[in-house]
Image (cartoon, rainbow, N blue to C red; front, side, top):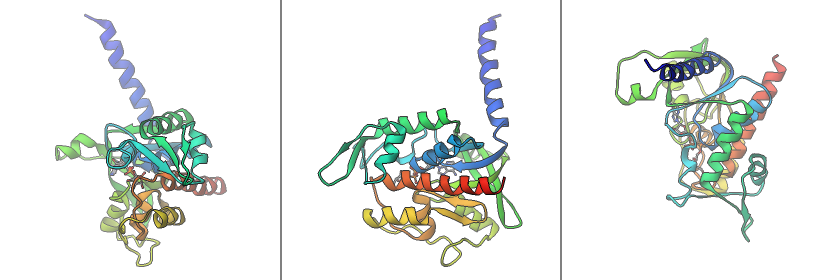
Length: 261
Ligand code: 48F
């Protein structure tokens, strides 16, 4: 019998279950490991809160890997270069005061720095529903992504969180589920999802930052999910708004956590 093989299996199983068990009761649960979700997770973890992030895909990074139309370079506007500095991402400034960075280096840095700060990232897990009590979001309902992909009839598990963040990007998956299943009124003009509008980088970058925040009791939006919820334009391959949105949602939530200790 080869005992080493069994020890390897045991080490993986023990560690994963330790990680998962310590994510059952969270201060913050984030859905989606794009630039907004990763940045939010980094700034929340840095302050010592219990924060985990659930990502459907095998790889974290969301829409950042492919830059614009698969040219794997990203652009950020003025102000967001401070966040590139925070993550140690190298960049070059253009004559138009745009900052250019390598998409792969950027994703690598976001993942590395956020996990080092204490963010637990669970890849291959899909958030399929929410835990809702008296109209308030109290956690997430999770399942293995391959269960969803194979349409298997397997019930999910639940994690509890004081605050949750929908950082699922354009589809705004979690908040849409909240509206559809629980009829919760959103803090939007109509109380419902307003939907994303067509491209305009300038407006989109301002809009996403302005609307990042609480969209329903204990439920927050960051990144493109904020544009989709509140009816803002998309902005294509400029990512500064996503990074600043992640920081903003982290600032709002950590302030709330401090107040409600
Ligand atoms: O799409 P994504 O990168 O969102 P973001 O952080 O950034 C948007 C930009 O990438 C780009 C843009 C820039 O101007 O417009 O599109 O707002 O990352 C969202 C992540 O959420 C995951 C998805 O796989 C992706 O990695 N995701 C979506 N729905 C779920 C999910 C779900 N139900 N459960 C778990 N993960």
